[in-house]
Image (cartoon, rainbow, N blue to C red; front, top):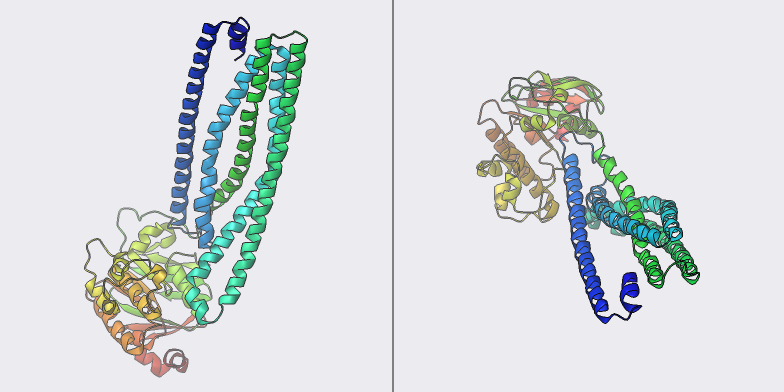
Length: 518
């Protein structure tokens, strides 16, 4: 525009004016297209970076060694995998626009230097000062953004828990208390969000004020130089135009600072999950041979169990009757490779499981927890989830009594369309359909009636003993299940009291009778 003023307007050249206006139009089209293409590339980079982070987070959460979910509600992990990864990915877009803004400032400074050394030096020296001040102004925003994300994630986790347990809460009349808890959490989240918003507003306002003062100084210096005749009319127009132009890249850099502050806060939360230590040791496959199915627990100390020894025989249906539920749960978690024992260990085919890959161990040693979750879909889809591809599900469903529900019966999220006993039968059918060499079941029939439980016990034994070498461990105090076992290990006070058949233990120990038959 300064060239147009000097070469066309000042000389009254209409043809030159038209030519330079066409040049300006071509420059505008080029800048517009380049901005759109650059923004598209930045958005694509942001989405790809966020997606890559989400994939890494999911891989970490699903890692066989576990540990990522320790101390974190599912809603918190969902928030980290969505909102935090989005903010970290947005740094790519911020970097794209930031580089463009920096290049605009550099070109503007060079042009101003050619017009006037004073104007050029003013821009070159003033912009770094503005950037440094903007960086320090973004520090409160970074801190408050981290608190905002933490509170919002916690509120999401509480809400998810509330929805998941709504039926139970209604049953015990605890809905008002649960809603009150969520309101308190939500208010805390709102407070953190408002504090972050205030910090962002202060940061934007102060930065905009600094930019305004800086541009005013540039315009003032340029005007005085023009009045003094140090620069021509066209150069003065160019200088003032460039001073106004600098507002946009400086505002962009201020926005980039805010995005980087939020991105750093979210990146710390993402990194915390990715760097979470595994709950159990992660080894490798045994050298030179595949996994088998011979299980042994040697002098195990975990969660109240002391000096626990157990060696199920291949093909055996073994009952483990544990007086204390906490001890039974500790045994289940240890066998499921959810936690490491305090002392002693678990061996598979003579190799300590902490030296083996947890995923490979679980292919051989399947632990079906008492509170196993179901997924939205049909009964058949849930049962088939752990079964070999193309496996016949009919026998497993019949043995677990899940055939009465119908394969096409809708389950709903976490099995909310089914009763407690129906959910247990579907979960048991899923465990049986996996057809693992070693199957550990923890209280699989606590919610079914006595007649159904007896039928399931017989069906379970018939299915698991149909093929030789299939070992089954029932951790339970159910007399119907213990009656179909080959032998029962009676554990009281964290130590093994006796090992015999169910009938023999009933006759020998009054404490066993009280725990199992009462």
